[in-house]
Length: 187
Image (cartoon, rainbow, N blue to C red; front, side, top):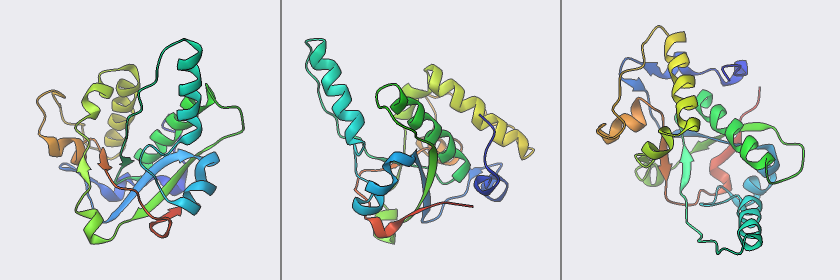
């Protein structure tokens, strides 16, 4: 999973002993199948309509009800980290949705008022305890090592909330993001 395209390798510019630098520029990893919709509508909270509809149909088939949740827009300060989540999105969608999809990274430039609302994704603690999270931590450790830095030891249940942002590169915004703030990252 460390086969990051050269144009997305930004950790050498962002990563220090204190973690990843932040600014008003963020990144969001997603599937190529969603790009046209995002460029038209922006990044929407709980925005993968096709995946949500598939889950509803699956639960109905099982005779169970589906409780919708509103998820925020997940962001990272690094293109390389967003690439990881883009791959996860494609993998998750491939199990439910037919089609040719590829991982893509979107650049999100937030106006100051929205940038102030970006929060560390402390809720990721439960995700990081699962296999997906273990894989992410291994990927993250590799990025740190490639830059001559050891990933600091983090007790996920007791970590300072800013560690999720600075050290783990995990953030969210509980707002929709307009299309004029979003641009596809390409080489």
